[in-house]
Image (cartoon, rainbow, N blue to C red):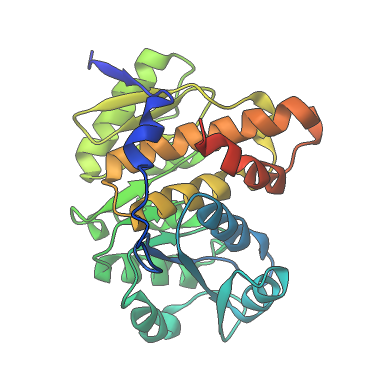
Length: 283
């Protein structure tokens, strides 16, 4: 059994250090978020707001027209570019390639929809990307169908139990030891960082394994995975390495959920977690 790292609040000291008084915009990263569809408009917004609340300087959302317009109307803090159509497809790849330039990291997958043209476009994009990238939600289903597209790139995959079963062909048991084993195996096979989300998050890069115990049962509500992806993308954009960013993101997202749940219990929603993120990163 691999020796495991227990993620604690000490991880905050690793990813948040005193800022140079002469710091300027772009020093702490510009994150690109690709997500959303005609039906699912909230995912990229939640990821983007979580990224801003955890220190990224700029976040740009690229999404199909309805999702981008909803994002632009939601907050003046967001940059949103609309793509034609109701969901992502290969015709959008040239525009995506333009937006990748001068970015520091990418979050891909939330709310994209699992239509065949969407999954095909995701695989084509993943083949081309050379930036640290969080692969979440529908994008996990895309790469699960052709794992070779990952090709040893700079990826953090953040599956829930069902997505992990699709990705690795193994349904996670409730045994933490078993989860450690299968996550480590999946990370080694994919040559990527894999975070299996759950009551205890299990994170591995194929060699190291970490366990995160922040979070609570009220975080089953939709959108909590989007906030996690946004936090992880923010830390990647700020220059932190994949495994560290994944560990810190799991801790921060779970801690923010704990802070919000103490006040709201079963009434918690993802925007409550986002509001709690500044307090969570203060330790």
